[in-house]
Image (cartoon, rainbow over all chains, first blue to last red; front, side, top):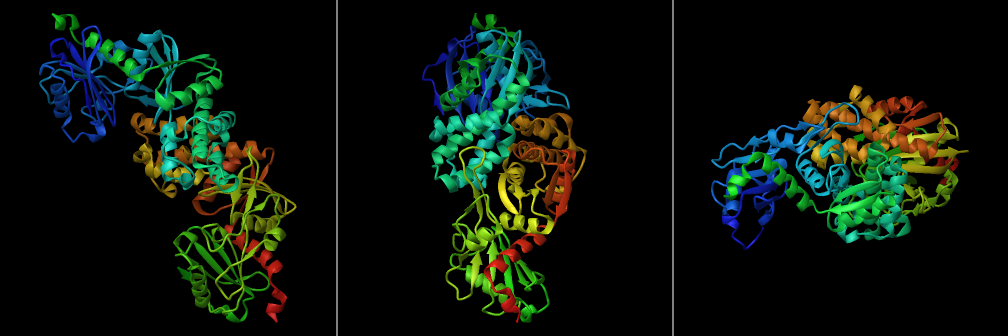
Length: 318
Length: 318
């Protein structure tokens, strides 16, 4: 758990929360959308006991020295069925205004806590998908970098989205990061792999896997087994096989996203660290021009845009 | 553990073992290749303590009433590095004669026990692969049904192989069954799935997944996540989502195998039970003419062909 030492109680207009499955970030925010202080913790949705959301939130806000009646806007899995309270998904196309209008008021607290909905894509075809938290990041991205974008948010469940005039018109989720974790922890080939992607990192083996995964995504089930064959036959080390796996899966994701979202030459990548390095390489190899954005900056911008619709921030400042 | 009640000691010319990772099958065999009795147990390679292979084998042979000096031929993971003793892989193209010539004699027993090698495919490109046990099944298939075949052996690690004039000239392994098990047991989407493929079985949902997986294999990472979205949005039940997953993965395998082995219109399918049902449907939907073979019959035919090269079966009969 990390906390800013400052006591922004006097100037905070509201608090913003990015409340995911595993982590919680709380910012004290100015009326203009500047972060005044932050607390980051492992109090994600999955780690909060039943009925404990209000208590957890109050604790973090008190540590930040914020008033007991300060309003809060939150996004992410806190609004899932198994979260604090369900904020039902909005259909795509969706805009930030709709998100604010359909925010729910969290029950069981005197404080004014608003939870933003996620977004869904209906349809029996390719288009059945959901997001919860990323929509706020995407709206923030649109505010930061212009309203028309193809965006890639890599992770456990990588999101690709098309934004038009600041609205989310289409998106798709790829199970890339989760599959990497499952294979490196539970598969027969785990003995040939490291569990830590950062340990493998960027290498020629990543490039080779990326090339094969993007050129022949239909061979991915074969390539996964072939990692074991490569271990037995070529004596390739764990680091190279892990990097190859990472390249194969990211290549397969890019092949799928390329076919789904076609013809875009620019992509906004919301990532940091080794994930950003690997996806930058992969996206450039696939012919995209890449602009890398900071996830925290994006989600804060989205939360602030929602807060401006939800709260009287001008009034709060006086 | 199952055992035939008969006591074939007098007529057995040798014993044949299909000794895999999880299971062991031992047959008392006539000189003509007829099975006289069988024992089936969970004494697979992974369940045999260090140095215990000879003891385990002797126990099963004694239960079958077979002589202490009866010769044995075995295939499968018993010949892996972590098995009884390593029988190094032979390179493809490979023939049954080569398998017999390069069989190793198992150490630590007075009995003449020969372990057949596996087969590998070298190369840094699409062709890095290994099999151990399936090669014997494939040679048996060729003896049963003619020497030129495209063959599909579905399972945890599905094998596709091209046989020419009775030899294995090319093959590829797909991690289809293992990925199904990993996803239904460990993935976030496990809550939307059954762990038992048989429980899901053949259905319209399987057909729909098959169609999507084979037509858009590059979207497989998206389709896996979309199972969760379908659960949340459409209220599809576990059985349908499990059947869809099965269809998606088999469709993806068929897309990869189709591209790899191209232009074949006939396939020999070595499978039984629900797996045979699902693959028959899938292969026919992809335009193949399917001949389904029994795996036990195939592996016994391959073991017998090897035994004829290894042992003096005519002498044993007199």
